[in-house]
Image (cartoon, rainbow, N blue to C red):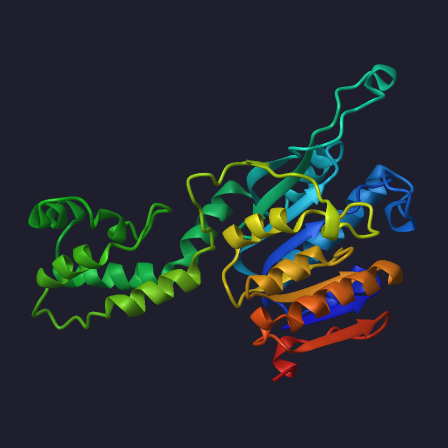
Length: 338
């Protein structure tokens, strides 16, 4: 499913339901770098950064607990943006996109600068407040239903963590009983069965492991890592069929790489500066739902066509629902579509 809007993103964001978005994925305007009206609408850097903070306020409201926020930005603005956004979210990584086949800098000797071969992105989670301790408390709260279950489980056992380790002959269950620590984690199925064997007749109702696992997966932030999930992503710049008229279009493969790591199927991805719609195309390809906004009518039309084509592909025949709004209209929510 997808919903697209042509207009100013701030009023549109305010129309989005609270705690309804799983991932914010945005290529922010670069601020005065691109020869487009939408990149030159702020007179000063401070005004631009204030605008970014207005976005952040809405991101914090509309995202679910423990969501991901991934923001591409101009390398010269990255530090300024980070300082502002650190007040709203917890920074997980500073990502570098290395453009493997970037064109050589012919004028480096005139500009007297190193040739740019990279772009930058900031990877945040919404699990944050203004102090480090609050971040810890929110982290613990995310798994609180499971923590409480294992706290009651330990009480039914009538044993300390040390005694549990001794009875099992190992420490594999220990983190399940860190119910007041950020190091809490769900035990393996095998270890869970060993714990149940320690507590056969104490009147405690044990949950099925699959139910615990499903609850655990629903509560934690998605991150589908492999051995090459690094903070430097090497990927060639766009070419051929991927070229659009938008000056900052990113490669489909780059977006696939990132969104497949930080989101799960059926989750909602939002891009409030969607340009030519690459994030929307990839979101649908990966089986996610998409909410997108673009202020420029020309690029909105390009994005709309690309996303519509993606949704009509045989691979996405389960995603037929769509809606588009124009300036001044309220963005529809997905539950309006069947």
